[in-house]
Length: 136
Image (tube, rainbow, N blue to C red; front, side):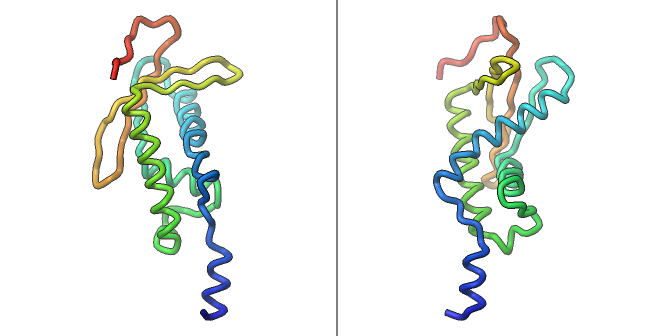
């Protein structure tokens, strides 16, 4: 192996299972930012699995989506993990997390899937709402 190739291996990020386990937290942070800036109501927030992967990679390693060819393996693994997380939330039908400002509950539905890019809709559910979750 050439020294250039060895040097390249040390620079590439390593998405270990423990690192990939942080993807749901990245989703929660993204949803919190979007919901905080959105006017109150039950309008859905749409998030794509590829968009989440791009956001996660940028925040974790500082690698932009335009560098996808250079870091092909990294983008592939993170996108696969994001799709897996999204499929879990779709099958569950809702997502919930606690923050210092209170408990957040969002209904989740599959909006679309285009060439492996899963797009989910997240609907804020106000506390005490009569809105029923599906019994999947």
